[in-house]
Image (cartoon, rainbow, N blue to C red; front, top):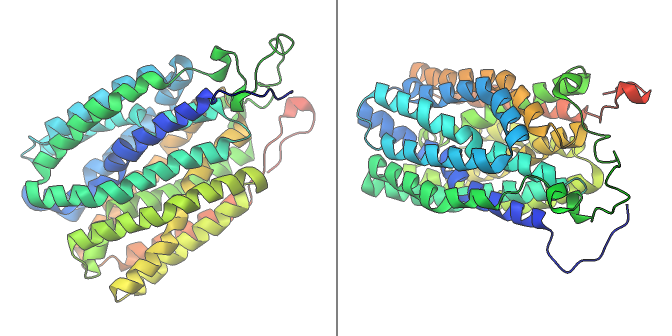
Length: 419
C-alpha cells in the first residue's frame, strides 16, 4: 500500500480527541467517581457496604447481558447515534439520582437509567470507533484515549470529592448530569462511521481506484462465530474476566479501602487522583511499545505489578507505603487499553464491537459478584484483607494467561488457528 504525503491531519485523530474528552470528563466521573459517592450514599440512605455495592454490581450484570446487543448495534449503526442517545440518557440519570431518597429509588435509577445510557455512552463506543480508524497505530490511539480517561480521573475525582463533601452527593450528582448533557453529548457529532466513508484507509492512507475492490482490509476480519471457535478467544475472555473483576471491585471500594487503612476520604481521593496522574505517561508509552513489540508480554508485566501492589497495600502501614503500593497498581490502569487493543489485533475491525460485546456476559458475571462479595467481607470481618489478597492472586493469574496469547490464523487460509 503506497503512502501518500498529506498536509491535513488524519480525521481519525479527531475521533481520538473526541473520545479522549468524552472519557476524560464524563467517563472518568462515571466509572471512577462512584467510589467518591460510596460512603456518603451509604451513610445518607443507611446502607451497608454490601448494599451500596449492589447497584454497581447489578449494572455490570446488566451491561453483560446487553454487551452483545450494544456491540452489534455499534457495528451496524455506528457510534454517533448510540453515543448521542447514551450520553443524554446517562446525564438525565444522574439528574434523577440527585432526588433519590430511598435504596429502591437509588437502585432503579442507577440500574435502569444511568447504566443503560452508559453502555453506549463511553468506553465501549469510543474503543469501537478508534479500532475502526486505526490498525498500525491502534495501540497508541487507544492508549491516548485510555490515558485521557485516567487523567480525567486524576483531576476530577478529587474535585468531585470536594463537591460531595461540601455540597452533598445529591447536588454533585445533578452537576455531573448537567455536565454530561451540555459538554459531552455534542461530541457525538464528531464521530464518522469509518475512514473508508471519507476515502481513506485506516491510519490515513488514501484509497486509490485500484484498491477499491481489494479485500486487503477484510482479510483479518473475523465474525463473532468464527472468533468464538478459537482457543485464543476463550483465553482472552478468561484473562479479561479476572483483571476486570479485580479492577472494578478495587476501584469501587478504593476510598473505603484507603479509609480502612487510616486515610481520610479526601486524602483517599487525592491518592487515587495521583495514581491516575502517574499512570498517564506510562499508558501512552506502553501503547507505543505495544504497537512496536507486541502486547501479551507487556500485559504480563502490567498485571504482575498490579497483583503485587494489592499484596503490598494490605501490608502498608503509612501514607507513604500506601502511595508506593498504589504506584504499582498503575499496571492495571496501563493494561486496560492494551487488553482491548488485542481484540482488534486478533479479530480485526468489522465486527470489533460485537466480538468485544460477546465477551461481556462472561466477564461481567465476575464483576457482578465480586464487588458485593467484597462489601460482605468488609461488613463481616471489618477488614479488606481477604479482598486484597485474593485480588492479588487473580491479577497474577490473569497476567500469566495474557502472556500465552498469540494471534489466531483463520482455518480457511489453510494453516489452522494457534494460541
